[in-house]
Structures are given as structure tokens and as C-alpha cells.
Length: 171
Image (cartoon, rainbow, N blue to C red; front, side, top):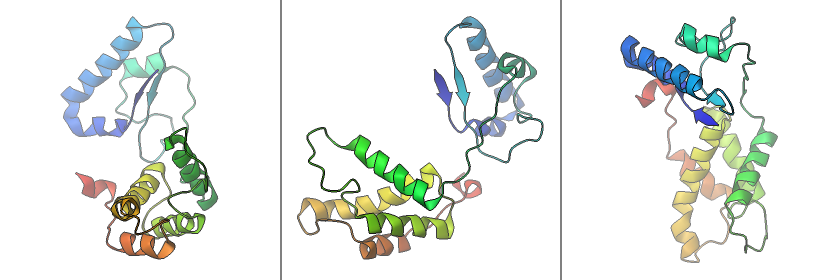
């Protein structure tokens, strides 16, 4: 399995680079006729006829009939489950579970999700960025024993200092 994320950036490279990337992908696909799955993840509005124009005819031919998966932004409850699942996956096996949201409280997680929704969609990246920002600010205080759990007020204060860059501003 080979996953290429942010594949829409192929468009920024110009025709020559786009052609080279497409050629490389369809050549790789030809060289591995069995057991290779390519996942090309990209952002943007869905195309009515399937794939964006920057997929070469050869690559389209290799893809053949496919189902395009569209992942809409999460609902707040889905975002909460996502956060809990990520935190559980990152725990060391010896961790004695006090709360699946630790070092955040569940209320804090809900507040962070609400804050994200004010400026952005509930996408995995925006969720991870917001929680990471809060955790980076809290970590030294947690390590020093100054706070035991990140509160909603702490999260609001931290996120108030952050701006959200849209795709066109990221460069």
C-alpha cells in the first residue's frame, strides 16, 4: 500500500513536473501488477465526472473504475471520538487509565472542538493542530506539577492567541 497525501499540490509544479509524477506513478503501477494499492489523497471540490484534470490519461486508465471517497468534515461528537481514539493510541501500555481524554478533561475537549468550529472545519488536521497547540502550552506546567488536567479556560486562553491559516495562505 502506498499513500500520497496532499496530491492536489501536483498542480502547482507545472506541466513538466506533473507529467513526470504521473509517469512515475503509472510506471510504478505497471511494475507492480499484483498487491499494490495506491491511495491518492487530495483536497478540493469533487469533480462531477470523477477525477481532477491533473490525473494523466495513463494514470486514469490504470485506475479504471473506482469509487471516489469524499470525507466531509466531522460532526462534534465524531471529533470527540477521534480525539479519544488518538489519545488512547498514543498511550504507553502501562498507563493506568483515569480518563480516556487525559491530560484534557472531556469538557475541555468539547471546548476545543467548539473553538475549532468558530474558524475552521472539523477535519483531522485542524483538530490535531488545535489540540497540539493547547498541549504544547500545558506540557511544561504538567511536568512541573502546576496543573493536573487541562481546563476549558486554559484551552480557550491558548487558542485565543492562535490564528487559522487557510490553504491559500499556507504557501
